Image 1 (cartoon, rainbow, N blue to C red):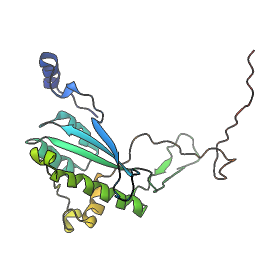
Image 2 (tube, one colour):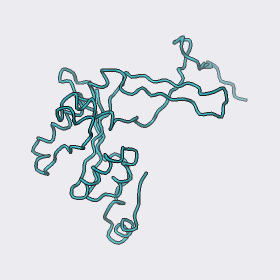
Image 3 (cartoon, rainbow, N blue to C red):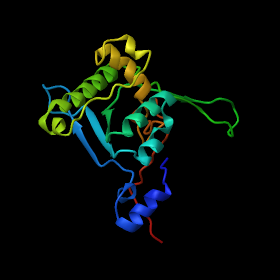
Image 4 (tube, one colour):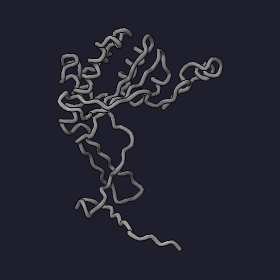
Length: 207
């Protein structure tokens, strides 16, 4: 959800500046490896940047727990906020879809089972720590960047930025990525669990 205020409209129309000078898409992203021994990326990073008192940030945080959203909005009152999302490439956790009833009008039950595979969790933790480590670089330090501590009672029982802390942290900040597809396997001639048959014709009739 994007919140547009009249002040934003005026600033754009009168001065060609402000929130509406950019669209709500990822301004920067990249594929990175969290393991030095390989060049094969295991995470994708999305970077969103919100200027101080951003109306876009307030709209983006609607799906988070209220206390977390309020803490981030409070930080944004006096500081620009960079929101860096770490996405696991090729996740191994597998969910499932099942029916709730025999009626075709009832919604199915979708159980995503995020982070049920330990490797997905550990890779995500490495990715988060990697991004935080960049705040020690000259470019980040020049702009006074630091990792924001958001109070979360369950996670604050652990040492801040420890592995146990981040195992808890991703439960509050983790979410599904976009483009969910493929609830049914295809090509039963290649996979006995597939349910959709594809028949490829070797001839075309034109008439």
